[in-house]
Image (cartoon, rainbow, N blue to C red; front, side, top):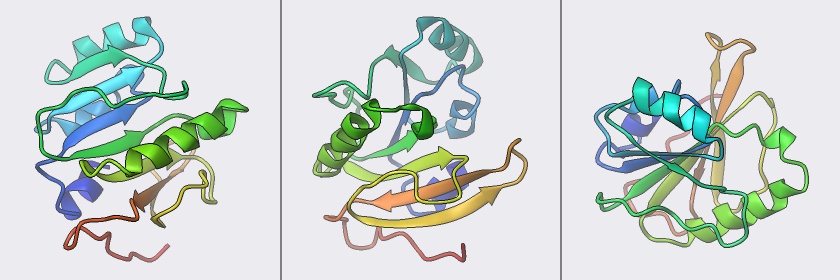
Length: 161
């Protein structure tokens, strides 16, 4: 995921990771301003030990009115490892929150890590399936969204699916 973020020219963006768990994906973002969010404080305690370069907060990104945490970088790239297929009714609120966050001019884009071979979320904006991660078991896909109001020069490049 870091490679995708850096390839898109977002190297100076903060990374805000939804569903960071113990920090297994967070590790790849060392060098960025990183804020990991999760519901489970026990997982966050492990993430703090695994990724001392990052800041971690308890947050429910599927709650009505969720707001981004404060960050110091000019822009932020959102990353989600939340298993959206398991969200049930909360998925609608998650999608609504993401769509609202896309209206924030500081949000550069969004990556969703998923096991679904098809588009996992119904969001407006440019979307593409970027990679199949074979090293992950089971293999996983990464979908990239660019908010509709994207900044010129920051458009995601097409890559074969």
